[in-house]
Every structure is written in C-alpha cells, then in structure tokens.
Image (cartoon, rainbow, N blue to C red; front, side, top):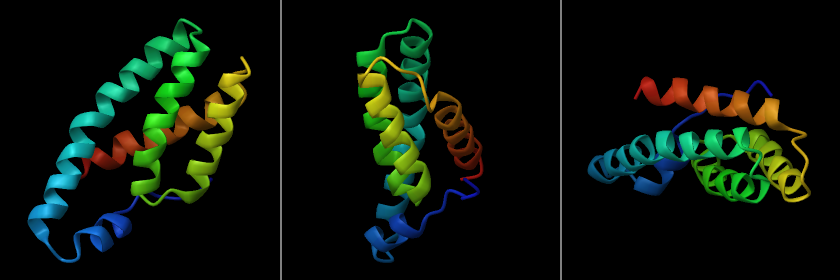
Length: 106
C-alpha cells in the first residue's frame, strides 16, 4: 500500500488549536491498543461478526490518520469478515502494525 500515517486530517480538524490536537492524539493513542487487542482475540477465535465490528471501529482511526488506501482495504476486509472470509487479514494486520509504529513516534 505504501502509504504512511500522518496528522494532516488532525491538523485540519484542530485548526491550529494545539490543545485540541493533543487531545485528539491522546484519545487515539489510548483507544487504539485496546481496540487492536480485542480484534486480535476475536480474529484468533474466528469470531467473524465481532471481528468485523472491531475492524469497523478501527477504520475510523485509519481514516483520521490519513490512510485512504488502507481505509479501503479495511472496508473490504470488514465486508469479507461479514461473509465469513478472512481474505484481507494480512493487509489489515500490516495496517495495524503501521499505525502501532506511528503512534509510538507521537
């Protein structure tokens, strides 16, 4: 996919308000690891419906971090999970790692 997470959308949303920007980043950094862990447990247990719901939640963070192509891949994976298929899991797991690594730099 070759795209990198960024703060462009957060910068636009915050309109130069550094306190608001910091709050958004703090929320993402606090929520993402838990959402990722729940997804991992559900996917390991092959709970497709729950996994699809987890992916849906995580998609919002993918979007906020400016990952347009990754959002599409996550959307496709979510739909596949709803059909009982894990096609797209590898790409989604790569996206999760990309975001995890990026959040460590903030």
